[in-house]
Amino acid sequence: MHYENYETKKRILDKIKEYGRILIFRHKRPDGDATGSTKGLQRILKLTYPEKEILLQNCDFADYMAFLGGEDELIPDEKYADALGIVIDTGTEERISNRKFSLCKELIKIDHHINIAPYGDLMWVEEERSSACEMIADFYATFKDELKIDTEAATYIYCGMVTDSGRFRFRSVSGDTMRLGGMLLDLNIDVDTLYANLYMKEFNTFKFESYAYGKMQITENGVAYLHVTKEMQEEFGLSQEDASASVSLMDSIKNSLIWLAFIDNDDGSIRVRLRSRFVTINCIGEKYSGGGHACAAGATVYSVEEMNSLIADADARLKEYKENNEGWL
Ligand code: AMP
Image (cartoon, rainbow, N blue to C red; front, top):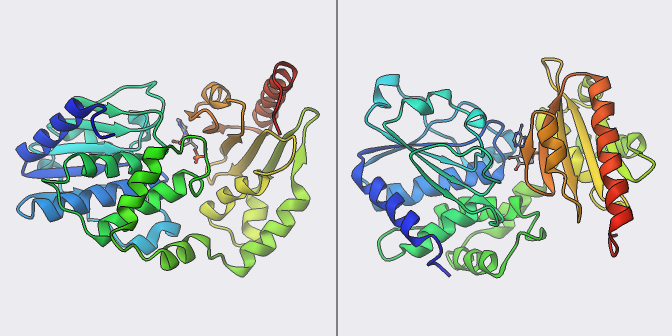
């Protein structure tokens, strides 16, 4: 299982060996996969090459991933010039959190998103992987005679695999996912603590959720949607992350194969989270300044009119899908 793209992975390992300073980047508004994959690779490289400087250089953080621990301070610009940059879990250059990534001497892209915008001097992209963390686990497994790992690294990586695969539920989960997950579990991950950290919510969040159930709507052809306005966020004391998590409240409504959460941003724009089962929706995300995976995409709209237009597009997409396909739920 470890021989697919072996040459590319080998070239990445050779590059890592070549450099004394390696800077690891990820996307803005990081999730469990972006956080876990970068911290996991950093830990593996630190254990294996204690003489090298391996730093996470990112500009924003996810509060709900804070339990995985802190990250490194940003270093001065001049320290980038002789560094190797590795960007993980980030489909496009625009989404890289730290804009100084381009100062690195060489850049490697490791990603599992659809490769619509290639970048970097060396790319390892496997679109069918359930998470970037799965790729980091595979990278370790491929070179396990050379690389070192421990429980801490395994926990970071497993955390990203669990979160990005919907707890091993999405169709991107393969036998490889489970084999690599099993390899990590064998390293004594404390799953009780991990899942407690992933599932615990403030009491107020439950109150918001009961309110949100009352607010969600469904279009004629079955697109479920919810607009989490600034007022709602203030009333329930929601962080951006709490508000954004509301998309999952709509994930199991029968006949609603597409569901959308609109979350007001501070700058007046509206973040869109698009989700679906069976039907692909990244084309809708791409139309509204976004993109992503077939069944999980993101976008941004700038007015309620544009929001309604996106809902109408999703409704038309679902109508067409239902007319031409059978067996969906
Ligand atoms: P999210 O709803 O933010 O979790 O995004 C779902 C998926 O779509 C993730 O895999 C993101 O990487 C991707 N995505 C989100 N926003 C964008 C964007 N503006 N451009 C491209 N891809 C995006």
